[in-house]
Length: 79
Image (tube, rainbow, N blue to C red; front, side):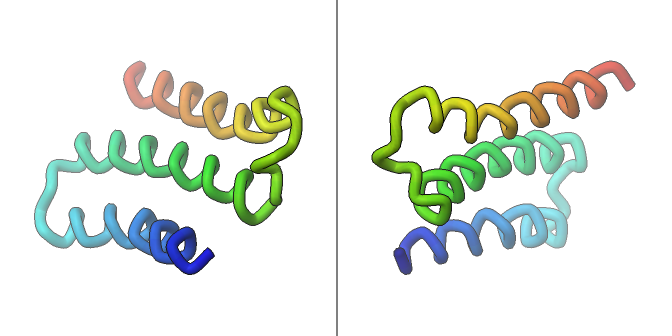
């Protein structure tokens, strides 16, 4: 469980550190999108304790992140 906390903290800190290092904002947006998906998987599997639940329930629980990221990525690409 400690490893999950550390990974979640690194996923949260990563874009901030990258921004302070001067990474291009366009790259930061895609980095955040990817990390949102990683965090969603970790949160559903470990903190919602759905790691051993039926496949359909896990897909439904983690699917919201994919939908949100897809919509936001579409908006980002359109603008």
